[in-house]
Image: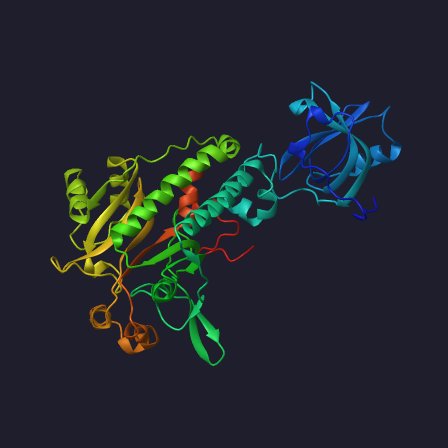
Length: 439
């Protein structure tokens, strides 16, 4: 079968826009082929697109031989364009179908397909990721990324309404943002450079220019995790606010999280139904428990964590059982937080840092930042870092740097919570982990 050109055909409707009220109207639909059936005197196939699906029905007595031949040539997931008339039909899905006057086969899909696009035959995640483009045509996967798209819109609208300005910072950098974190080196002409772990240092100094800034962009961590909640390239939502403390930015973060949960419930009902996920809005205000209180709760529950250690995954899981909602952990030991976090003057072994948890999953971290050069140099040295390597950053602190605070929120983990999926790889179109560099 010779393939067709698009020519002057243009889509007039998405499948979801075809209703019985359009009966008799001529429409042009474009998408991919789902189930194909031949009932003798009747041929039909399902056409699916980003809007959903519609039945294309071809009674032998009402369509041309050419149309019937085109249907015979179709394979599942071939791309097609259909021009035809809308017919109200109670037996059809959604009570409506399209009878084709003409069909263009734009590209035939090879058979057999690497996975069953209907989902009736289950495939493991690696198989699905290997055939990701086909996987992403499935309603469940499309629901995840429609929600993700909505969340990105909501976040931008919210932050702009709070007078934050969107910025874009470099992703190729000369030095580490945080001590101890692994870096991906890249060859940068005659020098070695690294993929950025965070926009942290850039967004901090930008508060002395633009007052309030935010960025939504990728960060890279060369850590050899192999879990359902870690990737090596993730999307981070970062803010930084001038003349602010951790309490100010925690309030902003809590307001954003409540808004996103509420609006996803209100605006993404069909997607949540497809995902079979009952999204419950977190109770506000979020509890703010100290690191010491968290360790006491864990100890009482039989989970031992030494003071000064970060919380391991088993401890986070236990806290999630004890506090089955969103909550902040504050007053962390200074020694386990980054060099730019402001210490507590009244308790110098603690700092103004926080983590936002949702059950057992860390969604965000942030705090009050240091804005004076002498203290920043001191903490760099305490972390075993050479201040000379940070001279391009430190010089900004001699130019009237302001008190500031901020946070970084993991978009991919937030999508996990909002959609009910259990593996972060499903929240990313083309995920990157220690084993996967394609597709």
